[in-house]
Figure (cartoon, rainbow, N blue to C red):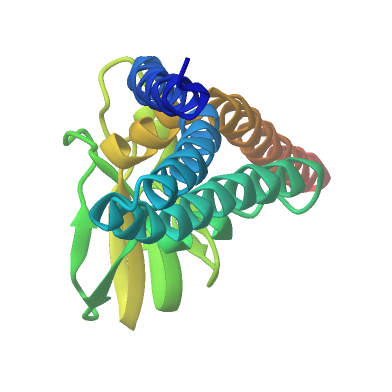
Length: 215
């Protein structure tokens, strides 16, 4: 009995099973972990059979899978930190697109369809209807993704030249599909920001009522 031949055949079947199993996975972190294991297995298999094209392919794919796994783990960790910390959404920046804005430019109008959210990098921006000026580092438009009709609730205007980063709701949804844990913490973060805004609004209303009572 050719033991080396049996071992070789078993190795090939195992590698094939890993590849097939990888295609059945839908979430990104388990998929990347399985991809790394598959790369290592096929590198060993290719070296044993002197199949250098297979070795070269998986030597290239291995660091890519490691990088993507690190990227997703880092994303989840940063979202968790934001939930427990200052509610910042700066962790979305690697997935956003840069856009320059001029004074007087309207980024979106009230009641129009919402498809993306924005991160303010520089310049001055305000919500027209409420008169609220948004600071650098603020995220605006994230609640439109969660509203039933995806409509804007206010108009956003640029007051002074600046730059924003934008990310589509579709991209955020893709991140959620790739990693449900990200989606869970994202919803917690958006909910926390909503309650924070409500508390701020209640405080402003209380101050206004106190002023009216005093007069």
